[in-house]
Length: 542
Image (cartoon, rainbow, N blue to C red):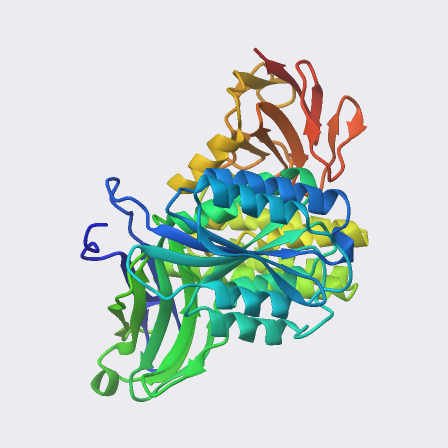
């Protein structure tokens, strides 16, 4: 691999107020991290990947069968220089295959061992993670280390709380990032999300076994697209400035260098924001407008050397009333919106649906009052407002336990404070994830489209790609401007040459040929009649 680029990460620190009168004040500072693109000619680092598979009793039958087939496909999509290990866990953890480079014989051996796995007993996620960490090789240049964990249930052996498992993941992160996949509606998305955040990875939701290949491939492919890993912020306030809290990141830790905040790995061309809430008595002579220094320790993916970039938050002191910095103000609202959504999911867990809907709607009003906000203009704030509306309406319908689980898991996968979270499109951004999605499509599927026969823009034909999100927002792959269509309503994706339609936990109905679509994707055939909310479409295939 070539030498690291001069800069693979940029950091900014911007108060939400451009000017504030002198005196005591609370000043939220938006810290935004952006991973630069990896040069096109730069070959990605080899992966050392450990797959951690739940084989507890609830995985028996089709769930485990789909996982077996998915692992076999993943092995075929990875490069020969990549390394793979497999760990299985139920009450205890078992090493299925040690870390090995992927020649043809190794691929066959791993697939054969995974195919012989059986499902029984309880769920010990801690044991699976600890055994996986032992398989990760020592750090070296040109190697990206990662753990991908798949589970369909709640931990009931070993460490079983969100905090305890997050601590396990945090301890492993210096060796490897950890991403998680929640399989089906029975898993605890809070636990898997906490593991992924503490482990520097991402959480994904597999609503139905039929989509396991696609979700697992994209989770693994995303590891190949990581541009910056090992990100840790050091927050150093000026004398007289107090950091009250950090929103949008795991709980900070104190150190002699400053307040430490871990941030998940970033793929190329993506960004993540958090808010540092500061409190100070603003005085020009004493502070000079400087509030906070942010130092971002990080590594370019595939390199051992730790690097550092920094930014300083300044504010003008004076005038009679605060003057907002509109972009920072909007970004801070996105970060806070994610926190409110998580709070609403917690209330819904306790059956407090009215309370969950109420806090979502109150925050929608706060967005409406934001400086520069324009409804339905396609901006990140208007997209966030639409997402909050969908989730509030879902809570007001008092969903069943299964529907609530799907709603929570789907919502947890998309952080509004990330560049790829606010978009309604489900298309993967990175080259490796795109390559794997293309390969899973199988033999050339042939051209296909959706024809709108009743509803907005009747007569329009929407050409279909490998993965297409249908929704009412302009950032959807197939936008449908109807209040009866959810922001992210349904997906059409290709596997092995066939097109499938999957509902995304929409608040309004999805039907195929007059039958309501459940959690299981439907394989589309030429002439199938599809209803999305109040919009009627026909699937056409050449």
